[in-house]
Length: 325
Image 1 (tube, rainbow, N blue to C red):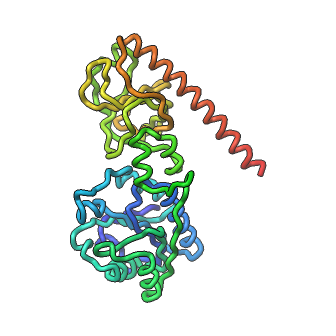
Image 2 (image 1 turned 90 degrees about the horizontal axis):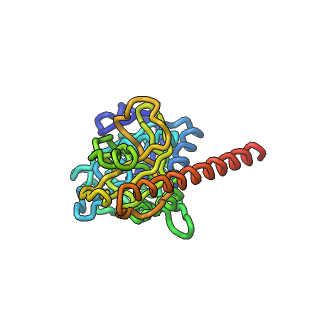
Image 3 (image 1 turned 30 degrees about the vertical axis):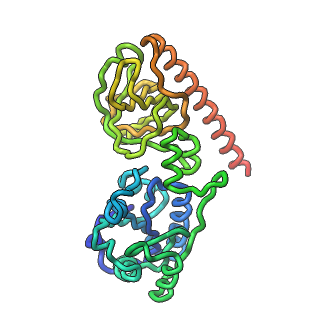
């Protein structure tokens, strides 16, 4: 069972021994996934608890509030991805001024060693920790020798000559390059939130849509996308076409996220949605009439259906090759 601790006080007495990784893990991209796999492997080899230590809020909100990045994933999404990676536990450490003031050696001794019983610590090559980011991978290694835990430093993942990083993923998504972002994430970027009432004009004039109030801080660039929409409560899933924009054909002024499901609901309207962005179809534009917009939507639907047919065929080919090999 996956355990979540939301303070140091919740950590059981004599916790460990453990294999631990530390970081923000925003997006949980391929670089993070490589680190998590190493932690899980070490834990299996030794029978140790596997745990990720992450922070809430993002440390820059405390130490440099003018440089706080927009987050790719909520804490809830991050924890779900940790569990999917095979970790047994996570510590969501409240990042307070007191934590920020800990010297690197104090952070290691008080939290990693005394609280978490770390026997192995796995981090990326650019890992920084402790007051004023004074700690680095070399200092962590020295602490490991002092306190008796192994340190493993994981090299970054490179995709098309670029280092996979949270900032690189943010840039791709914000520019609408969701297909490229998916390569860095190892999955399509998803936006989750509550279903809210729209203005109703689009449903009357074109096609019925579900409207999302996003909880994600990063959104793809305005435009129309081939997506997959999921009800996280029931697991129901639909291919979909999603528009992010201001509904210029209807004189909209507020940014909206509207998703048109390409299959029937087969049940009640969902209270929440998760929309995975697979491919950008086009820019949002103002049409001369609702009829013109409706015609374009059906072209978008046809392009999306074709895309998912090709995707399914490629996935079947990959599975067949794996079975043969």
